[in-house]
Image (cartoon, rainbow, N blue to C red; front, side, top):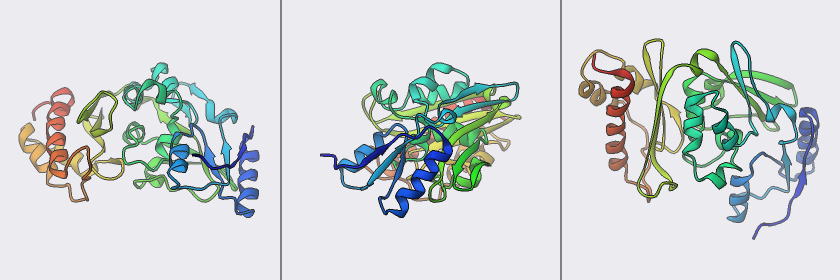
Length: 276
């Protein structure tokens, strides 16, 4: 069963920040809430015990979808279903369409997925590939920072801060892309590996979920895949750069994950990179 907690739904950034500060001082362990799927699940499992949740879906900036001549702005509290239907960032729409099932995607939000604690968090991949900028709200006001400065396996926000928006520059929205998800079983089961790739400025960019216990931009693999050589040579050298703790769970062993990744990389190169 779910224990009790106080629920708040502020209508502005400042109201949310003030609420968090007040509740934190009262030692209620407040958390920001957009989709709530992970918070509710973890609460049921007694892994978190918030005394209060602050729902950010009534804050206009968190629900915004806006594109001008140079930038697409995506509110952090937009559901994956809404993002999938917008089609303004094709790679992101593709990734969102593959997360969980349709019912879950109606509740899961972009910010909730990126800020979550599960291993996979595939929604982060397109933003890592596109050098997205994050708009963060907190006690000090609103700040904007490139994703690579804050996303180190997890989004490293200061206490009381929350993700308002993500901004992607137009050239990334129009770049060629591919995203491949491999599951062990079922169309909606947990993935073994998800690989997303953009072809930008004549180079492959690569981001991976399911290899390590967190999603990441695969800088070292990219470097090898963009060198001259055959697909086989480039992939073999790229795989040698993997030196982290590869996941082992019921979805697949470390060796199986590496086998799946290797085959996905052939598909990526065939689709975007070709032989060199």
